[in-house]
Image (tube, rainbow, N blue to C red; front, side, top):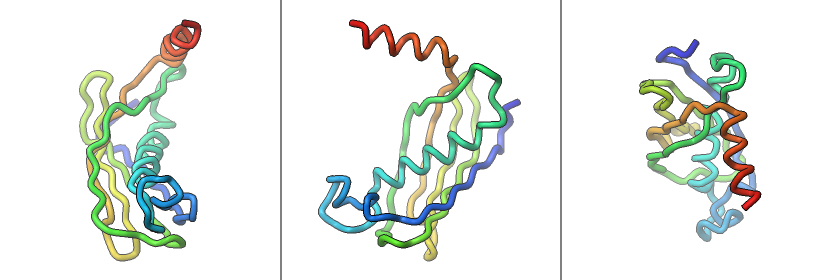
Length: 129
């Protein structure tokens, strides 16, 4: 059962493939904002694994994130999420990324609860057209 306060945590070491240069989102060999956001989303998503009923999943709905400082390749980054609001099928998370010097990114991430079978069917209909 879903309750406010569900938390997630993930630790990740920044790799060459995660840089802004490698992801074509900038010319620098530092942790890309897009890579940081993907790991924030993953942390929130995985935190729900033991709380959703069978046949349900969540999909990303929105991200409002700030990236505060550069982080070099090889740095261990800790990601945290906490479910802070539930409004119908919309779940709102506070997400953070922390490197050894403190908070490097933070913001709000919304996910929507979906029926897996129905959601997949909608995607297949689009593919068939």
